[in-house]
Image (cartoon, rainbow, N blue to C red; front, top):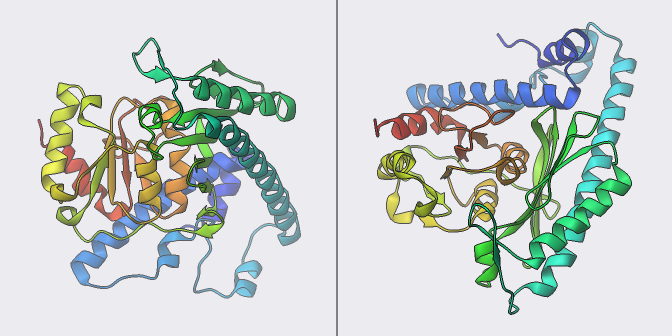
Length: 348
């Protein structure tokens, strides 16, 4: 029998003093576990539960009429409705700000695309251009003006903690190498984290005019239209993607190749950076596996993929949050998690 997730949300907020947006992330982790159990049961019994039974993020019982559900609630419905409206309005405000950030970054990037840019090398030998810096500066100007108490973590200009527990995480051009090569497969990544957990994410491709938006408790959209990941019946049928083998060290590369050998490796995609994750959210890929990612590389991906029905975790299947090591695994079908984790471990 399911425990009502509304009870968990109230417990998180009123007893443990966990912010609502973080509570939604924790509840989503419970939902993914249900999805994995449902997927396994479907394989064994051939019976598939309705998606609502496993994916009702707010913990409602889809088979119960709304009026019956409201009568059974232990707290005042009007108070909860007002609180819910307030949270929705706050999230709408954050989303509007994130979209303005993406607009500003795109305006700074587009004039430099397919021009004779030169790149400098950062301390980790990765390239950086005037477009990277201009895009992050444009986003930072907006945040300083509109959210001065929030922290900022940017790839090009570092971190500031802020005073709210909220931090905007910015990667102005994820895929600078591809950008320099004139390939429109890079993206601007924008995330909002609360106490280190991503609750809002944007993947913006400013050349193609494609924008994926994910937020806790809401479905992911591409240019305003909902998108969904696709089911994957077995690992051998999975299309796997990664930015490139040279981003793995010898140890991690061995684990990646063990996974690749268990997938449909003739359909493996190399290159694409954040665009691979966007394609997974839209149902065109099944797995993305990478190592060495930093907060600005992965924070925006989590809400986008989870809101589309997928899952983002580390190589052990644990959620990405404070202290994440940079080993990132994205799955379109969470039912394949155990298969993928087992395959990654086979290199030992």
